[in-house]
Image (cartoon, rainbow, N blue to C red; front, side):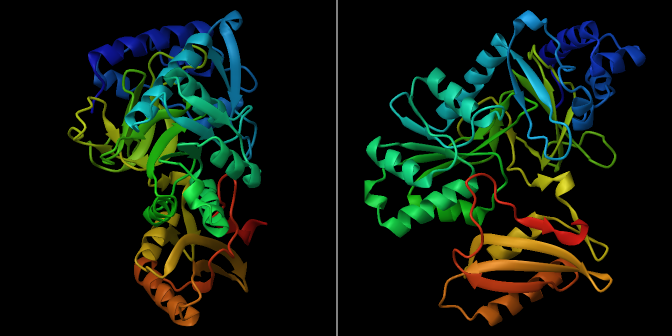
Length: 411
């Protein structure tokens, strides 16, 4: 899906603002002698922006609007270096709320719903993004924030929450606690809006079945507003994204050239109307594809497929490139295995070792299941891992994101 003339006009306005602000991207444009673009080809020749560029602009080097127009900042976690600080104008905040409210509407959520928000507040974009969108929609917000499962469940019952907003890891933890306490008949949830981490079909089915709710994938990242830039509708044929606010390309992460619709690659996003910190051709490192054609719901907004992983998810073990998604797909073929797994990679006696921990119920022959999983993994990735099968509930649960890959080689 190539960039339209209307979108090109908006990009040219962003180029003018970036050049005038003389920030990192404005300087890139000046050095390349670029003052605007007049065709899809010219747009595709624009330089990319990367997270390292944004870190290098710390603290407020991304600020493109005058400071008197900046009303808020948000930030990435900064776990692997300096955090990225994203300034927002009042219009940015409003645009984000509009997009998020649209997400709720596409999920069939109305102003009569009671929305329980469990992601974190503060510098992280999640909690406040879910709240602003719900308030824009006119729904009742129950702003719980993360953790304190006891209170989450009490409020869920007392307030009659109908929508749960959370990470998939926390939705799973809550579903297990509800089952353990035997309070499912007191829970009125109908829908879950799940974001911030990739999750397998098996995990989705476990949560949906356990809670008896419809689940919706919401997409976003701090650098591009936050969550709320895309969501799947009831037909679940991909996530609609808001092309009146964003232009999305899919590129080959090796050649860096755009790929045709339908082919997988890396998501690259250009903000079309952002004022505080516009980004052009920002490499997200998320892997997906644009789904061709129109959704059965009739929406004109294009669709992204489920996030398949990240270009930096790749693990190199014994000279083989392995992605967590490959392991998830293998485990889905074993109905005895739960959705929960953990991969540990270590270096012992001069060679790499991959251990896979998998949960199952007590009625299964653990050793037999471990051997069958190990055989299947070898047939897919070319070497045999050590597989350890454990009882359901023994692997760690998280109120935020679950760390599924632990690489001990560099500890």
